[in-house]
Image (tube, rainbow, N blue to C red):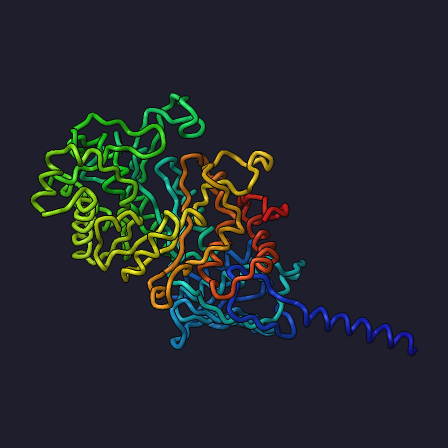
Length: 535
């Protein structure tokens, strides 16, 4: 009898130890996680209840998402029914993106300062469910209390659809991936030298000429002179743009369009040659790199065109920000252009750098008058900027540091840490990586190591509004390749943006295995390198 009791005590002790050591793995890392005793059975009998009508779409959406994790779709109700519920509520004492998640044996409560915050709480619940043991009865979730909120308000991801275009459904899938990682800005790069990708009804020829290039470079830029000989292009109609914006809004993601100017404009110039300094002719660019052909800053017709384009863009995108580019604008054409030189003289400008500032500030003023704000790449610092411009620092952190010292808002997106079109390992060939940008490898550990505050004083840190990864697509022609470059490096950036003050890379590498289960369930084509031990 004593031997039997001893065995029972050992079994009970082990069970208690396992319960005490249970934890949850969530990315981005929550602020507070307190494990509790007991478990909740998420089953076909579970009902997702909401009191506020604004939570109805989120409740329905996550009934579908949890069904993927558990194999069963919970019911949704506007009132509490039965004893086994997931209860969604709004809490006016919480911040807009702050949420609380409590899993108890009798009920799951998700509360937040807004429907967006509740959405984030349910994303965390989704990860917990993905990692939970399942049976015919349902998913067995550990009891836990989570209190969480993001560190940075701006957490973004950019997709270039100009070098290579993707379908509306693929763009939606990209947005789904962002939502899973609690990313709240989708930067949509829509115009370029190699293709114009947004329908503008006032200028229909953009959809016919600017949207098409006659062929595309094969292989690496500057290392190849081979072209595929195949016309390439496409356009997003305004109805398709509205559908993407609607889809993102339902997932609490703001879509920020980028309309490039004054450089990266060859697709527009090929369509309307009078917008350039020389008058053309121009061809939509078939290779990558930087073109010396840019919008003419001396002609009023240039500003008329841009303002007409932006008028339609504003009707399609309700976003606070409009990204107006400003990067990689050679001044060669302006130096030779009589109209540009006259503009410099008439406006009392010092040089072509100040001419670019005049260009950007004129467009910014036009947008400000219509209730919008601009984001520009860090080159717009050259020649001077207004206090209201937001700088996206991409050439390392120097531009962001300079802007913060000037008192301008900054989004840190340095190519040293955030350009996920770069190779992912130190030995791409040995690891079987597909063709990528070869400037430098960007392993996931380096993305995670981003410190947006590095080099700044405490006062200057207040101007850093967030972080963003950028996915340029010169060498990415399929959505499968997009996913390979995006995942899991996006998870690292997401944790920097959400949990900057509580980062732990080793812990992140352990937690990401739970997120991988969702990648598998969703059939995302993620890169395997981290999971193969390459950090």
